Length: 216
Ligand code: SAM
Image 1 (tube, protein in one colour):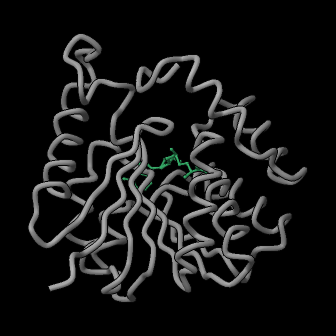
Image 2 (cartoon, rainbow, N blue to C red; image 1 turned 90 degrees about the vertical axis):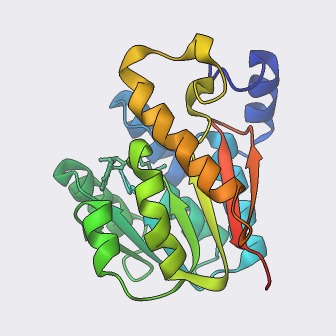
Image 3 (tube, helix red, strand yellow; image 1 turned 180 degrees about the horizontal axis):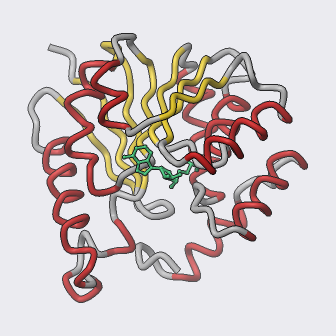
């Protein structure tokens, strides 16, 4: 389990999440069989709800994997959002391309191949929602670019910010994750202790941070 909230609560919340449709279930099954880390069920439900509330026209995602969360967000937006999603792993890019085609979302989801930081540096468009789900040890490096690319009323949702509880408890910290955890703490510090930003950290899934700009 995630070490974020008690197991019984996690299980309960997971079971409250709505069942995915057949097409998304297929992606969930593939991810499980092939050990592809996709967003958890309760995070998918949360993302879909956020998208349906915010009604973003343009979404930027860091970390496509097989295209699952992009498809979830597209569904939440009822096809009214254009999603740009960044992925550097060629196997993932091919699988995501195949899935997006199968789901009929080619005109809604565009994959940008490459490293997030390098692609972010080149992007100039503004986005209403940015979903961070790649390179857990680099959220602090991605943030300045994401803020530059974020519309005035835009929102950044970052997944895995509590990182299996290691961010909050030294007892859970494993040696090989020390750098990632340190950098994730830096990210949380950057978004939580900044007079220009508002952030809420939610212990859902592996921890989610939602950030927006304060009104001047
Ligand atoms: N958002 C996806 C979903 O829920 O369906 C899951 C994304 S998975 C957790 C993270 C993905 O980010 C992996 O496919 C990995 O190859 C990719 N990735 C990791 N670091 C990256 C980086 N620096 N630039 C681009 N892609 C990266």
